[in-house]
Length: 85
Image 1 (tube, rainbow, N blue to C red):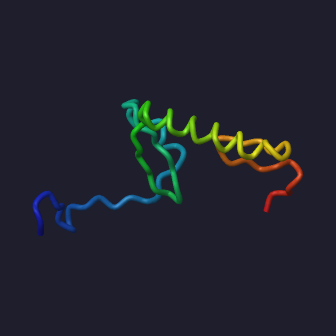
Image 2: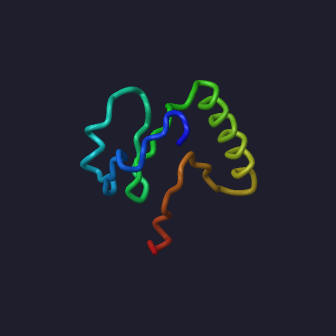
């Protein structure tokens, strides 16, 4: 067993995380998300990251709107004209 590893007999087994577990997470600036019962913890984006995303969105928006009205949006969405699957 390597340094810092927990012996198998001391590991805590846990069922899947649920929405009810989210309020128990600390308010430490990290982003807590659930994915298939797993808890994903991500640091908040840096100012550099947010600026890069904004600039990229601006470039894509300008390219997408030249020939016709095609909005560039920062996150996925479901078009009202497309029924959900």
